[in-house]
Length: 313
Image (cartoon, rainbow, N blue to C red; front, side, top):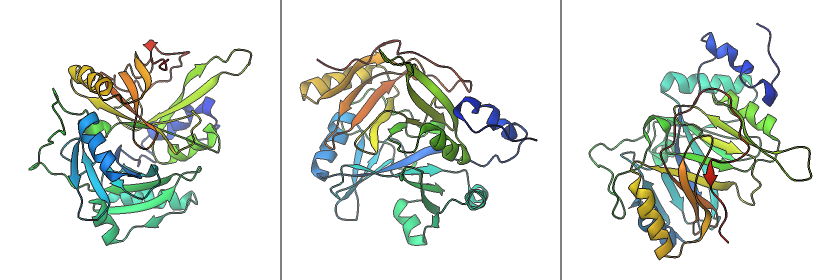
């Protein structure tokens, strides 16, 4: 079968090999995120009291784990002074897929290292490999996460429910990129993701609209997004609540504690997420959402959101 163009306009045609059961290995979810911070104390208060997450002290000094469900952790927070993303942890299904991913990366001439047993144990997974995307963002691919069904999620503050994770992973992230959306897409397509430009926002006085690329690897509408300029690797992390009332409760807490709001309540056109954005102690944002629809698995484009998501005055 003849290869098709790798450009963004040919995204869905370029996935045709997967329809025939060829080259199916790929990441299945965003499993965990590593963060560097200046103040661990501030982050522990923020994660528990604002987000509603469970904070667990680590044996290592200067580290805590943040839980959203019965995984050992979903965030690893290290007091290293960076106030930015340290790495993203992507899961593959098992041992066979982990070996196939190594072969896939080798054939594509992408450099990676296999983590030691000690490194895997530190991340609470069975095996791990490490690499970087074309923009230099550190990534980890793993299998066998440490699940703790004997330790049900215990929120850091009162909540009506928990967080929506499951087969959709912990949520989504919007990252900075420095090499262009086409090259970024081609790299993550190799890892097993698919997607397209979903937002083409008109810019007054310019012929070309502002474009944002969204990628998914499971039932969640998107796991990664690229296109917004940022001084840090991270623009935001989206966490989704199971109950609508937790959006209202969280918004009330944010206002009471005077946490800066990045974007006001609104509803996105692509994932239909009802959400708002808040700043965190490291200077980037969390999107707190509810009610996102599953991935459509088909290409759609939008010129703006359904409503809201405007910046505060």
